[in-house]
Amino acid sequence: MNKFLTKDIRLLGILIILTVLTSATLSTPIAVAATRTYKVGDITQTGGTVFYVLPYNTVSLWHYLEVAPDSWNSGKLSNTSFNKAESYVYAYADKSWYIPSSDEFATLYSESRAKRLKSITLKPGTYWTSTGVVTNKQIQSLQAFNTLTRKLTAYSYKNSNNGTVLLQVRPIRYLE
Image (cartoon, rainbow, N blue to C red; front, side, top):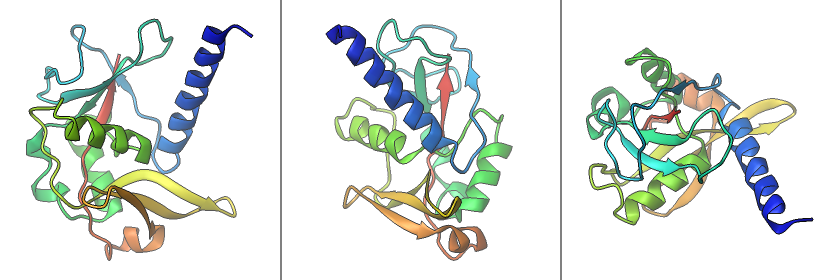
């Protein structure tokens, strides 16, 4: 098989996995039309920052991942239960914003550490992701990413909904 075709098939597989993981607990995010061509670190029209750009010639409904501005990383989005965070993210601005999957958050964290996102500050601590650990066809726990240890930890989905587990949230969204 052609090595370029193999690479494209692997990339498609990764994108499918990301989509499945992201939608494990949330409805499918919507892509928002981009106003121009962006590169990692660019500020968007909403004040967010592009932290991922799909490779050139990738066929997709979206081309960029944008993280919400620093101003969203305080107040109601700081130290909240997953259920409250999800409700707040969907109520804020429009329904295109969502809680990132563990892979999306790991990419955001890597770009932040590489200092390619000059306008974004990730506070030290643990952040909710939308990646669920599923057993018996039910979500048993949600993974959270700790910026200090750089590790994922699973928290009981039941506890996260009743408010006993309070973590930070950093919304992201797709841009076309």
